[in-house]
Every structure is written in structure tokens, then in C-alpha cells.
Length: 79
Image 1 (cartoon, rainbow, N blue to C red):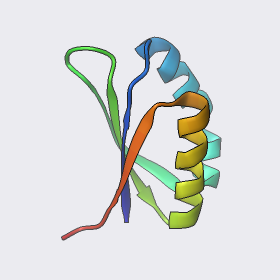
Image 2: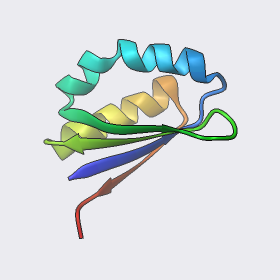
Image 3: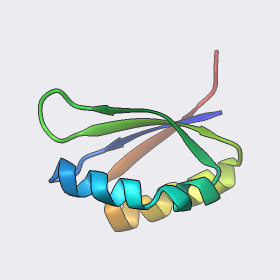
Image 4: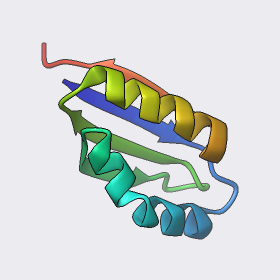
């Protein structure tokens, strides 16, 4: 299963520093970063993660939205 997230930071550089610093937290939540895209225009960021525990991933998503939000996430599986 995968998780696709979209982040809307006010500053990409600040967000990226925080994102890189929280790698271990994401790993503990069972998320593996597969791809990271930055909007060609603006500061939006989209990330694709592989997840191994949906509940842990949902808990991470909820915390991320409250502390570093806004973040939108969609759980997806291969069709």
C-alpha cells in the first residue's frame, strides 16, 4: 500500500529542512519515501511513500497535519 501526500508549506527550504530532520520519525511510522516532487511554480510538495502499517501511517499523517500542516494524504493501492 502507498500513501500520497501533498504539503503546502509557506517556505520550501524551511519545510525541507524539517522533512529531512524527521526521517527517523517516518521510518518508525513504517513509511518509506519513494519519490518527492516539488511544484514547478510555488512551494507545494508531493510525496509518495510505501507503507507497511496503515494505522501507524495514519497516526503519522494526523500528527503531521497538526504540527507541520496543512498536509493532505490519500492511501492508495496498485490497481
